[in-house]
Image 1 (spheres, helix red, strand yellow):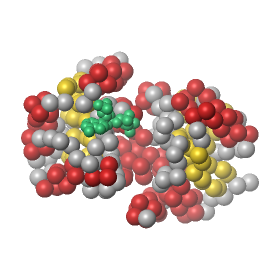
Image 2: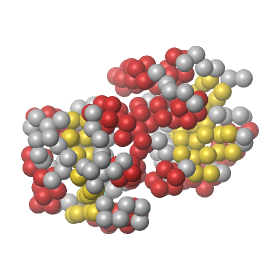
Image 3: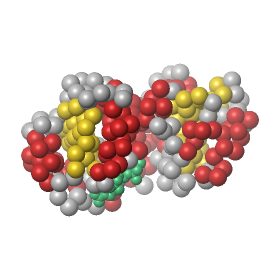
Length: 280
Ligand code: ATR
């Protein structure tokens, strides 16, 4: 029987996941389909029941349901619990297990695309939303020495810091978004990550003193439309190494594929499909 999979969200039309997952399924010659499925927040509980009944192998979850889905699942992985969000569900023996491959996807992308490892590194993370939480958790879980959260609304950085402090005592801090704190933090950073929505459609930060970062500091942007955001362009102009956001999307999808099918997908094929879908 053809295995069913998909990605749920609201809206869902623009999701790139079907393109890369269908390509990976075809490359592995699996009898499976992966569809984009529009599910509203009020229909989340029903969808989980329907997916189990219809024999789904699993599904991805995108905005805005990554946290709301959790209460309707039978079990949660440690990553999902610690990040407080689910992006991948695996259905086995009628039970729905929630996992989160966003953080792992980010770490894998750093390793594969930028040859960068988190161990003992100092990081400045801009933003304090859902993406920041997955990235902060994954960096600390991979041995980063220090992650400093800087967010426009400082209360959200404080809250996220409090959430992760129990797991990683003394390793996570937060600071206010001012020119002087940004300069201070950048000066001691091995990695600066933008997890805010700034950069989308070429929007820019008003002020970001990137030049105070050391020459080796990797500048990473989670935004991938455009692929080279204004932040990454500034980093290039300053001759800092850069890391594009598309890799996180690719490798979170690859990790989900592996959870469903217990085999590694063809990354090259997935990447080409993703790049083509993005161009269109
Ligand atoms: P996601 O789940 O993708 O992380 P989110 O939870 O909506 O998205 O978070 C968006 C992030 O972008 C927030 O950290 C937000 O800062 P605030 O908490 O102050 O709202 C940040 N952000 C959005 N626009 C910004 C801007 N112009 N300058 C700085 N940060 C901005």
